[in-house]
Image (cartoon, rainbow, N blue to C red; front, top):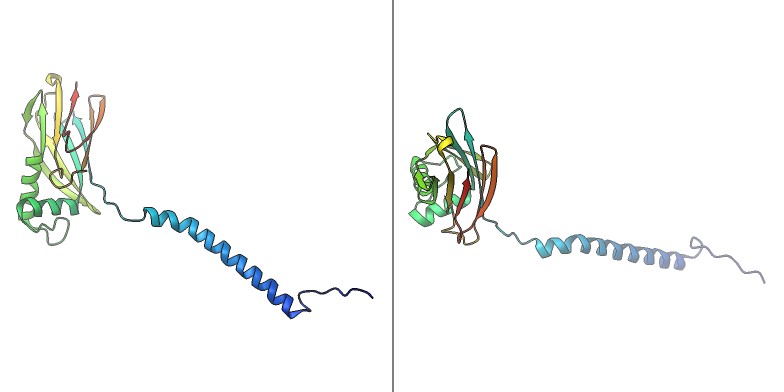
Amino acid sequence: MPIEKTTIWSNPYLWYTVCSLNHNVFKMKIKKILLLFLLPMLAFGAAHKFYISVTNIKYSDKDDALQITTRVFVDDMNMVLKERYGIDAVLGTKDESTVDLEYLEKYLRSKFRVTRNGKTADYILLGKKYDTDVVILYIEVPNMDLPNVISIGIENEILTDLFDDQQNVVHFNIDGKKKSFVLLKSDTKGMLNL
């Protein structure tokens, strides 16, 4: 008696079994792939806010001045102005007021200092602009007389009174000398010796 070949097309039960197996295998593969991609996102997906500012300092021969730009997150600055001075600052919005700007400068002058040869150097806040969620402050220290400068120091305590893990990164690029610092609440000063 010859054995009949059975194909999945001729046997509905066999067809259903093969399709079910393939479907289950497919579902398991999709679940594994999703798990591989989603697990890292779930494990590290909780938003962790980081607290950082970046300051760049360079010397302008033409102006005989230090030119300083400082970048700080606007929401952090608004928060510190509220915490420190009790004002509801709205920096970076259409509702920004002159009072907000006055307190911003007051805060900056209390937390950001420049020294030349160990003595405090006066600076001018030239202005500010916004770049998405960052405020960029433009500062100038005039009359540097660079040939007679031995050292330039920065003390940057911006936001360290509000955030214990605040990091204020400072990059010096003066007269061919480059140096960078990460200033923390426990160590707020950096110096470039010329």
